[in-house]
Length: 206
Ligand code: PRP
Ligand code: URA
Image 1 (cartoon, rainbow, N blue to C red):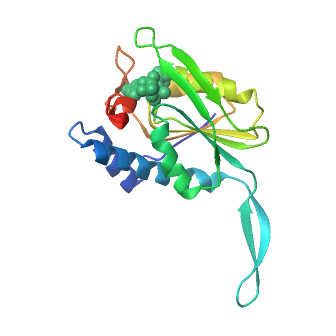
Image 2 (cartoon, rainbow, N blue to C red):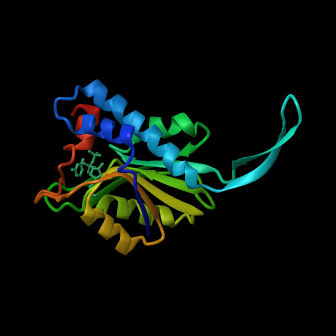
Image 3 (tube, rainbow, N blue to C red):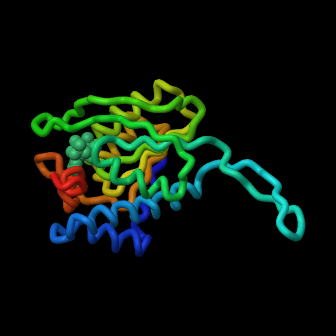
C-alpha cells in the first residue's frame, strides 16, 4: 500500500489545529473540514492519470490534458460527508456513492448499514473518511467497493493512527492511502490521540 502523509503543508496543518481545538465553534469546524478536504483533493489529484487533448487558444493550437478516468467519490457515513463538499469543489463532475458503516462503541467492530454507489467498474474511486482509527470501518468499506472492480482505489483521511495504517497495509496492500496527519496512537476506547474527538459528532453537532 502506498501511504502519503502531508504533514509539511503549512495551511493544512494550521487548519487541522483548529479542528483539534475543542473550543473551535461548530461553524468553523465545518468550514475548516471543507477547506482541508479541498486542499487534500488538490494534493491527491496530482497523482491521477491524464490523457492528451488539443485545444484551440485565441492564437494557435495547444496541447493539453484531460483527466483520463471518471472519478467516483465515496464518503463513509457519517463523518465522511464532511469531506464531500471540499472534494466536489475541485471535481464537480464526480459521481457520488455512499457507504454506511458505524463503529460499535464496545467492540470497535464496524457495523454496516447502507451501500449505494454508481457503477464503479473501471473508475477512479476515492473513499473519504476523516478518521482512520482501528481501520475496521475503512477496511470493511474497501472490501465492499472492490467487489465492483474499480480501476484504482484511493482512500483519503484527515487524521490517521499508526494502528489503522498497519491494519490497512495488511488487508488492502493495493490501495493508495493519503492522510493530512499521522497521530500518535489509539487510547483504550479506540480514539485517536491527540485526535479531535468524535468527528461525526463534532461535524453534525450531535
Ligand atoms: C468514525 C469515523 C470512521 C470510524 C473510524 O465513524 O468517521 O468511520 O469512526 O474508526 P475505525 O477506524 O476504528 O473503524 P463512527 O463510527 O463514529 O460513525 P459516524 O461517522 O456516523 O459518527
Ligand atoms: N472515530 C472518531 O470520530 N474519532 C476517533 O478518534 C476515532 C474514531
